[in-house]
Image (cartoon, rainbow, N blue to C red; front, side, top):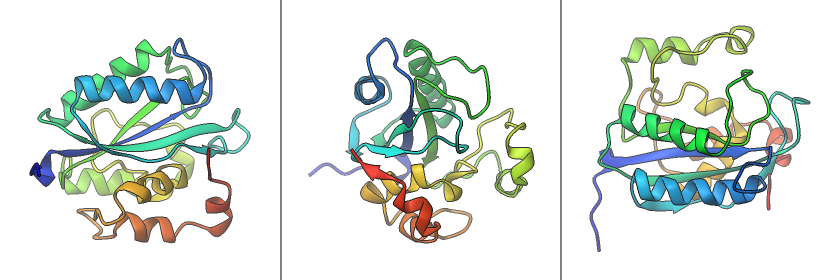
Length: 191
């Protein structure tokens, strides 16, 4: 049995709702997972793929979403840079916040790290919804500030890391997923 340090495990959310050079959204996620394993580190776990409504509602075709846990020796900033490179290779263009995309890769956490500091992380978590649509951080925020709000992230993540606890709130992935509105959870279906 291989021992892996908890602080070397990263969680990554994957999604897409437009074709990429790799194919349809499911094929794109498979391609991205291969690149993640080759460039960031071995995959410790991968969720099933889920069909989820576009966010925000009506902004495009349904997404295919998944989550992965990766063993890595890279720093969080290095992981994020590689994720952005993988997105670009799959045709991702950042033209509009929360728009349709070929591939979206989000670093959700790296171990129990809070970055850049607890105050900044808390400020982004507490950002009012109307400002979330137009404002984006100019640096890496960990854990991802919208983690607790997004069923399309939490439902796949609960399959592979239900017991991970948010270092600022103490809530587990399973608890955050259970707290989602039932109607939102009902719209997220395994492929």
